Image 1 (cartoon, one colour):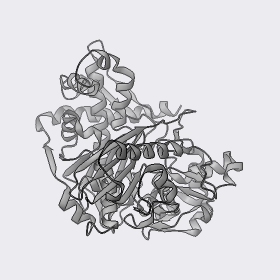
Image 2 (cartoon, one colour; image 1 turned 120 degrees about the vertical axis):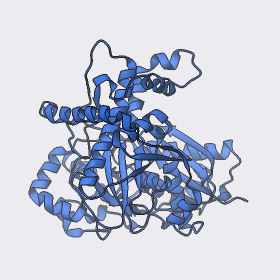
Image 3 (cartoon, rainbow, N blue to C red; image 1 turned 60 degrees about the horizontal axis):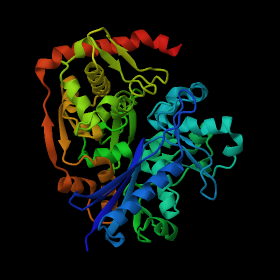
Image 4 (cartoon, rainbow, N blue to C red; image 1 turned 30 degrees about the vertical axis):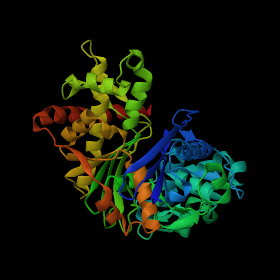
Length: 500
């Protein structure tokens, strides 16, 4: 009988469930899509029950469609998108849809708390600025807008800890997700009661904090009956999707850096000492005794997903045996670097780092009669690369410069887009052999938790291999430097108009 590990990723647009061997080979993988609800401008929320249904369906498909047996799975790791605020009552019932990381509804709450408590005091403890994307203001938003629901809250969970609760019946909070709440001490990885009271968050809402590799419980009989998993299968605390993806891409040691190509964009730099910067995001890595200094943008692979869904009817229906995304790549490849002066601001749900502007808007600039669909596609790719460069330059100014990026996420499958990012940033980009880095990172945590791996570093050394390398093309530097300058100037000149 094989020893296998199960990794679960609760992403923004879909969940992914994959089974791995201890050598990192994918045995099978399933995914299920779900909705992001946008009932008002600036809102973005999900029903946590959609995550559970999606994950459970994927697990059942694995057992029905493959030869994987429940008793072969030795451990389960769960990761998920950050900054949710899953409100459950004493019976574990979800009380309200949770705002997710793209949600910007709580700006007024942030403005008030920053003034009452002091931005510096909050940042000194939490290592992160208080912004509407985070979990903290969403909890306060519940209190001020739905007091009848707020009064029934027993715990606030993150999306991975909510699924773990459904699998095991155990309440938990992994250390890497602590960065979403500003009463979490980023130096000691503990809740701070004084700050919780100042923010107006009851300490009873806060789950116990676990290391990401800690086994928090076993699969319950109820979950086993629904999914086909073996009762008692160990489930570890898991972690943030970006952090698990960072581990799955091979980033476990200080100085190593991940480039994120999922729904969101950005990067994660592994560091071994506390180093906060208000323009960036600081959180614990899923690797013990490590932090991640992160840039997180709202425009990543989701930009191309949005473009394909809305403007690729021809590519989907022209009878080609190539996917619509491959065809979009082909027409973008015909456009020169710098996109003939066309520039895109990828602020599709406001923007996070480094500008922290919930009112920022997406913009296409430089249109004229010569522009084609290929220009639009390439401008989308270059705009996301400019956002990555902006974050890397901010990190370098804060003392965390990098030379090489390890790419992960669906965007890394595009050779063109990955090369554009290398050319725009001037950084070498390497792509690991598997494009299931996030679920694999979660599986590594399970492997460490149950003793299959001695450590996260040992797991990376054993499993992660580089598939290809993209070196920056110096001949394109001038064109991209010019376009990047326009990118920065556009926001500065348009931000007042955006705020109106």
